[in-house]
Image (cartoon, rainbow, N blue to C red; front, side, top):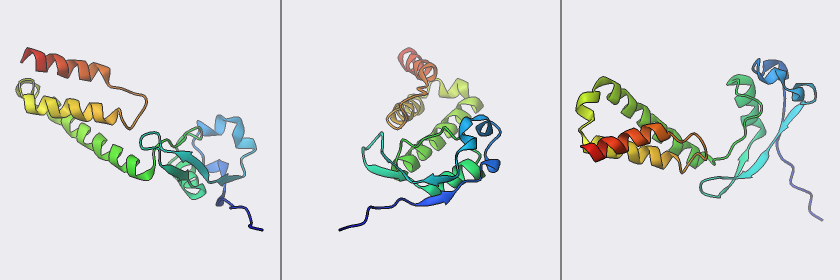
Length: 140
């Protein structure tokens, strides 16, 4: 007879949660974190939000306790790289809108990054920015 697979467990210290999270009723009954298995939203790979990761995210990084993972580690890292590139595009845009408004290579690359990010996140589409870029590409 095989023993059941036991998920990792980490003790919870709800006193270390963010102020917002301490308003949740779960503050009264959460004593530990347990591994949470899920399927990556983007690539469908099996993944685990480990008890230790939860402890770090909720108690050290002070993320909201209602946060759930939807991306595996590989997809998460890819999405962070895309976000970093998008920040760079936005900074360039702020520094030189007049010149970049006519730069089809820059605009096309920026639009592709915005559309690529949507494959990693099922919400928060930057529709206004995409529409602005599409209009600039049409007009230019």
